[in-house]
Length: 390
Image 1 (cartoon, rainbow, N blue to C red):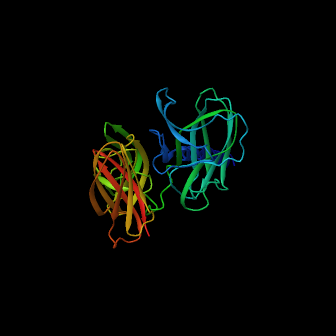
Image 2: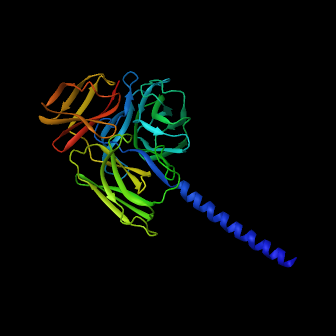
């Protein structure tokens, strides 16, 4: 009997230790987050698909020269009013760019704010599938009161899930104000658990363990570096880039240093392509020898504002697209249209003058319906517009 109790106590102790270890490992895994979107704001206008809706003369905008959290001048999203009276039932909304979200992930949404005036505002954080909804939608993630905080940056964090897989927008909806206001929003971030796999991932067990993935801007280039803990059946890594964080194209391939190894390796890749401007998103596609693959983290690099803006209409289009181009200087542009796989399907060179320009493009009638990227490249810069063919 004494022997039985000894064995029982030993197994109970071992179970307790394993339970703690597994819980700690699970907690570490859960706490590791992957960036879905990061918006630090730059220049003096919205970029990367953000949409702002006015209510009368009230609106969100991007202001340059704001004292950022590190004390240096930068840019931030701003809402201001000099009205001392109470303003209720407002519909002042700014939506993020399009986000692809899945119901199996618990996402985290965070941002910083400061209020340099004495007034206060009520802010609804809304989740919507339509960024043209000027009412903000019915799905309010959280309601905040933004009071004066003596110019100190305050961080807000909220977790949320979505009902179905698809495209969503997160809105900053000002519904109520009282007194003078000068509110700034910065460093808007959406994350998901890093161990969560994308819908396009093939297979269920992956032989490559990624320890870290980092990006760094060096002059006009982006330097990507990553480390693995182990590799099995690894062919290598396809490096992909995106201007909107949704539609990626392959820009390079880094072969595995060893197809099978119990030790990890360090890798680097430098994006030396010309024409990078605004925020560029990077991710890794790890490919096995047998063709299976896995997507790893997405990271963002901000290359600053371009000296040219471009919009296209109608969108969706049938056969023709009219480009509205605002240029700071006379430029020669190279226009390229690529399909969802990154294949070039149309190209043309045009010249624009300082100011507002319009150019009509007759696109190939044989183009199938679907998603396309129209890129304008000039003087080592570029702008990209997402188009849909009916």
